[in-house]
Image (cartoon, rainbow, N blue to C red):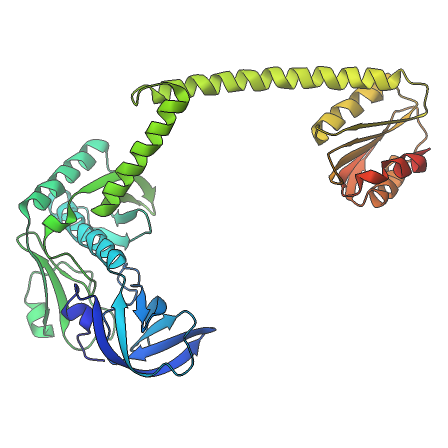
Length: 393
């Protein structure tokens, strides 16, 4: 592998004829090492490129022990010698936009506000930088976004080059320092008139290629602030997704974009009131059901509700404790074989609810637990309800 791989020499190159030097396995994943590559290995906050080697999908690229490993999905036997590498350009250009956007955002945050960037994360949907200041108010954030937009409109060239350690030491480079043990030349990325920084990633040719950057918000983290952003095609995709979602919400709520929050809040209030009324009706139904059961002459009261839930059974059981204190009940719910059950006994009953409840759970193919006068659990054999009732009798 040359000191300057093809992805660095020409970050816009999408196809390369090269050769496989060797292959291997790492943690159950197959990889190949190439004589040269246009696929960027993960590093510096930038994810790995994707692509293909002679049509075989490359799902990850990593630098390991000084070599670049291309992890492939289902490499056919005998893949060796001369090969053609193809780059997933859409993914690459997205990374170029987000990474170049980070350089511009970081440089202006530092020069204008003194906010030094301490970390960078290029996410799948949203990227972020962390700055070493505990408080970024909305006004400053808007000012930062406008300053970044001005530099995008200026279309400033973005270039990269390698320099010696001696040259690097004499230049006004924005950097957190070189990695421990670094040898050889130092790669610099420059946004003309704005920033000069050490970086090994891939970048746009000018700030104009960023199209636009939108700052999405902030959160406090480790004594600093994380600033979220999207750039370029991601911003257009995000705006399109918001527009489609708003169109669906307008149709559902019968409101304009501006009226959506108020309409949604009104619907939520209605839902809460409906749920409150429904709970009251279910409580009334549970009480009426308990009264109906208590009116029976049976010593063991049995009832099943296909469309109710365990909380409903618990409410019926509580009412039965008051209405039929000398009797035992088996209450079940659920459609098909799966559901829930409750075994309960009033204060005047001599039934050992804990012991008999465990036996009922076995019959109903479930498990449960309880204390005092109530045993409850899940069931997977509700068709055996009659057998369980006979056990209680």
